[in-house]
Amino acid sequence: MDYLIKNVEKYNVSKDYIQFCSNDKVNNCDLNVKYYKNNEFNKRINELCDELKVKLEINLSYDKEITKVNNLRNASVLILCKCFNITNVNALNNTTILYLDYNKKVNDVSMLYNIKKLSLWNCNKIKDIGMLRTLESLTITTKMYGLHLLKKLKILRIYSKLMKGSMLQEINKLKKINKDLIVDVMTRVYEN
Image (tube, rainbow, N blue to C red):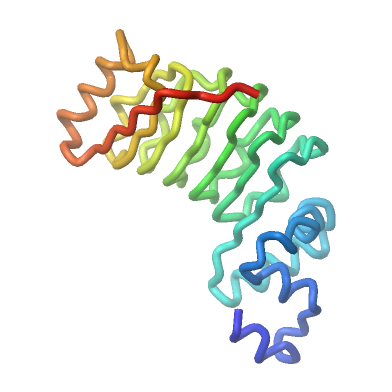
C-alpha cells in the first residue's frame, strides 16, 4: 500500500483506488460494492492488483442485491456471508478463501479447484465437497459427503450433532490418512 501511495502518478490512481487497497475495512464497504457494480473500477483494481502482486479481498456480506459472482472471480478472498440471492459460485475458481455462511441457495461448490479455506456455516443445500482436493480449512454445520477425500485438510470445524454415523466414519477415515488433522467440534450453531 505504501508503495502505491508513493507512486500515485506512475500508476495514475485516484483516492478511491488507494482507499480500496488499504486495510481500513470499515471505510471500504462502499468501495467493495463499487467494485462489484462498476466494471471500469473493477477492471482497474484487477490491473493494479496484478501489477503490484497484491491479493484482492472483497467483503460484500449482507448485500441482498448480489445475485451473480462472475465479476468477483479475480478476488483471492471473498466474504459473501448472508448474501442470500447468490445461487452459483462456479465462476470463483481463482478464489482461495471463501466465506459463504448462511447461503440457502448455492448447492454446488465442486468447481472451486483452488479453494484453501471454505466456510459453509448454515449452508444446507451443499451436500458434496469431495472435489475440493486443495481444501485446507473447512467449517460445516450440515451433513456433507466426500469429507474423507480431502487429504490436504488441516482444520475441520464441525457442528457436534454431525459427529455420528456416516459423517463420523468419514472423519475417522480422513484422520487415518491425515494424522495432523485438527477437528474443532462446535456445540452451538446460531440459526438466522
